[in-house]
Image (cartoon, rainbow, N blue to C red):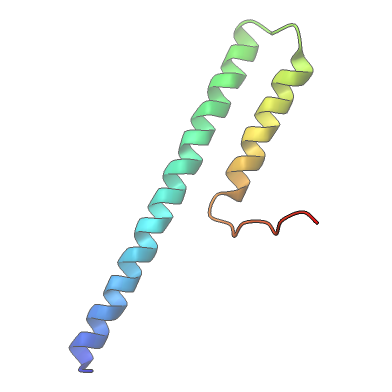
Length: 76
């Protein structure tokens, strides 16, 4: 393989990694927008069940933290 072919291969790999990072970033940004909307809704008119609303936000944050991570092993 020539040096040019090697550089093209490295460039293609970097582009793939960058595209994957952009996808993860987009997913995280989407989750952050959802969390912000839920927080805004809570501040505007608190629901009767604050515990459920807070848990929903915590679930969104936990989901955002797993974006781009390898999947967890199945439960035994």
